Image: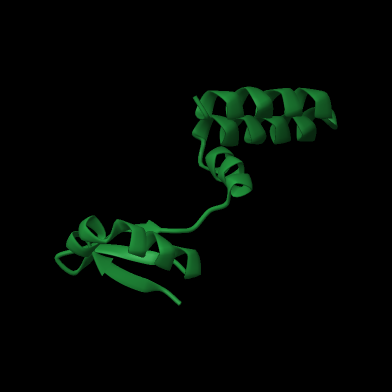
Length: 92
């Protein structure tokens, strides 16, 4: 279930709002208009989120797929090395 909270309540009750986000997404509003969404995430899920939202990593995946289509494959070793470099970069 999606919940809504205004910016003022978020500011005054951040701990409570974070607890609510663990039960479902919380839409943060300002003057009745949506501004952001708080979504609970686990430590394990953080790496996936950072990679999925990294334009450089997404481009690397797209490039790898194009190379695969053109040459018939790309080594797993190369793809994993690219992923590890990008993860290290976004986690700094």
